[in-house]
Image 1: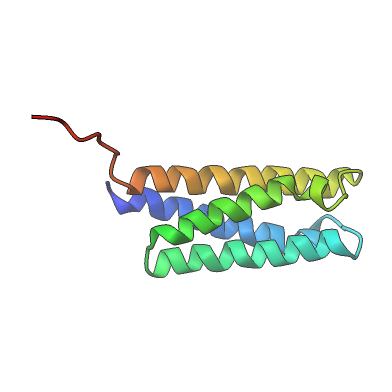
Image 2: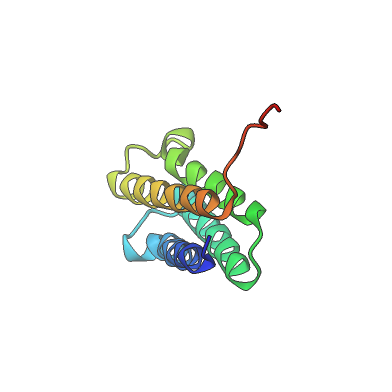
Length: 118
């Protein structure tokens, strides 16, 4: 599979990580665990995207998938689902990062084939 499509996913994840990183200031999140979660998760997503752009390894995409899923569910796990702005930002960015990572895993991995008996 052409790596250029996967690179587009990495660039998109880099942008999403940067948005999440700066979201407490952009959207005025209150200080505390929801801002910390946004900053730390945004840094992790951006660093993984940069690493994937520099030298692709499938483990980076699996980690991005895990971090994206964490960001998606973190409003409920950390108890800030009542803050609609922070929740919306986390759910949307988490879902997009997870989807992009899953797509990149799918396009870069060879298809699974069952062994044929002869």
